[in-house]
Length: 154
Image 1 (cartoon, rainbow, N blue to C red):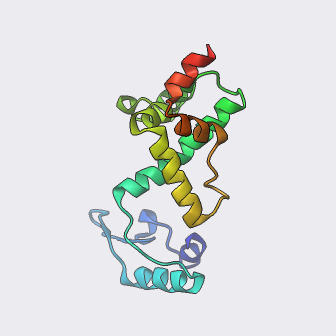
Image 2: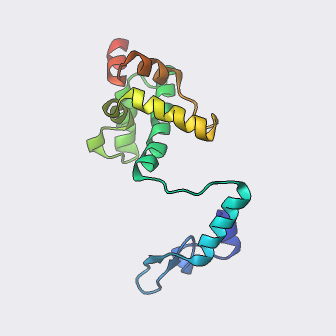
């Protein structure tokens, strides 16, 4: 879709149109029936079923890959502790400090829940982006947290 929008000279707010139209005075976004029709047409051509996506699913689809990659980083020995990964995300990427970073968040949500959801996404979207890390699978099946795993490594 990005390429199509560029070809239509729709570069976002600076041109007054992108995925949305923008009010010239307030820059408020407004739905654009032309783009909505284009999206529906492209989705149909690609065989993509359009559906409502909940805030929770958006959160999971954004955070769970970070958690999965974090597990791979721990397995490979690139980071020693889950908290090392959390520090990078909190201070380097402005991850919300009250959430404690992706690994801490995963412990809070439960690794089994994270693992099960990654498997669900894998079954829906394929393994290219949704292959669970072996460490995540192991800890989920053992009922452990990343924090417990980290303590065992010291």
